[in-house]
Length: 341
Image (cartoon, rainbow, N blue to C red; front, top):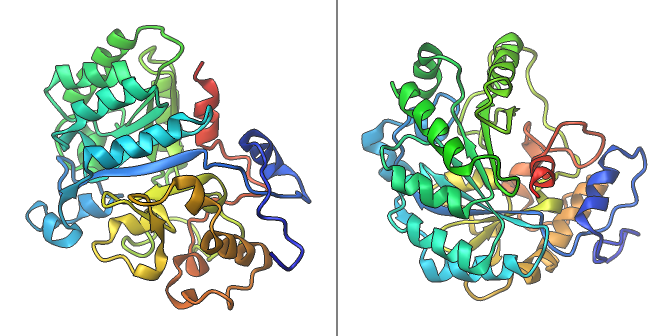
């Protein structure tokens, strides 16, 4: 491929992650992404989170700003079937909004069970539908609840609605359904607030609750400029370095387009030059090993983006939320996957 970088070879994902802390890693590309983010729904959410582009938009304007729609079950099945042929990867269900609002979610749960696809669902868990929660507990390997708080007051200030008691009830319910089954994992998360003491208290509270298998803090993102940076701390600086997103992640919009960055899915109109391929007619593996993504990886390794025809619109060059591939001790999604038996 040129420049002395071997980026067509196959390397097990576990070995790739082990090399993240190596001072001089000899990096090659895994045969398949470890986490495949699949957008299943967009346009609405019950929450008004201060750290989310959808949450900060007025509810009446969300469909106009972000568009509205859902993934087809045939496309969802195609994605699940391909992922199921690999032992490690996980299909991560997310939405530009709340995935529990997707009316075909129960059907998708059936597909996951039939294909035996390892899956991860990110949700606010704001619902009164216990049968839906039960179906999720039976099909999904990792359920992540973005409860974000340890009190009703903090929940209202960060999530924007009065639903802490309901979410607590749903977490207890799901814990009861899952029990101590080691093949499933119930976890909770909070988005970084800039107040380390509050964030640490969240982790301590939930880890000692006996309700969840883990609690952690997610890094705050600007979603490629859609949200302002945190006021606390020094201004963030763009980092031009290899990003985990392009070496271990894969992002699919509800229409089947593979997108260069997860955060771009929160834009209604995605620049077509940032589309890596179409999963409707291509395999994930084909796009993953394709020339466009290979060129982007090479640019990240060299720091030279000039050979990319879409250099001017590439969000990576000015990204302050890079997930560094090298030298980071932050627990990534691979840690959670490793805990599932």
